[in-house]
Image (cartoon, rainbow, N blue to C red; front, side, top):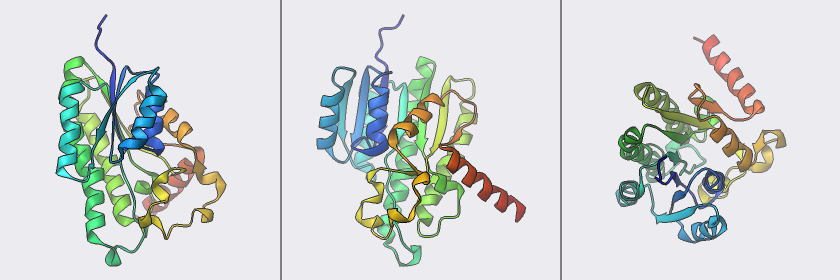
Length: 250
């Protein structure tokens, strides 16, 4: 019986899905490395979870080289990781041609660059301990036509493709990879200035999910063979219809 700590890293841990991943992983882990730009909410989360797990806080902006370096160093010092949750992300609503390219490139750096760097840092250690779990938080937007959020959806489509190929590369290693595709979820992602044009009231209630069920479905589905996990029956039906239309058009 190993006395090694069961350890998770969760990015975007200050709110929303990231904070909820920390809460639910606290029942499975001894140590949680919480990574986000804002330290104060993570301090509150660490206090909340102190009787369940030891929470290490890494204040880092993963759109930057320095921020990614801080997170990868935390893996080296506090790993190996049993769970890596690449959740940090944001979106920007608007026409690509008229939007700020700096914002779009920052999104690419965060969703793609940071995910690749953290996976690359974590996987060799996971191999050494005989397994682990990687969750790359994608979106149903990766599977649907998404005017107004074209770069966001494209980065999430990358995560889907990357996760499927990575799982194939890792066959037999004991490492499972999941690309989690939530639909509309009640988090802060829709409240930032870059999403000011998005009207939440225009989305019917049946399309909205809460963070708890989304994270629960993700963790429960980690050992399934399907890498891409679309959460919610309404979302799944929407995606299947869209994909059928795309196939019929070929």
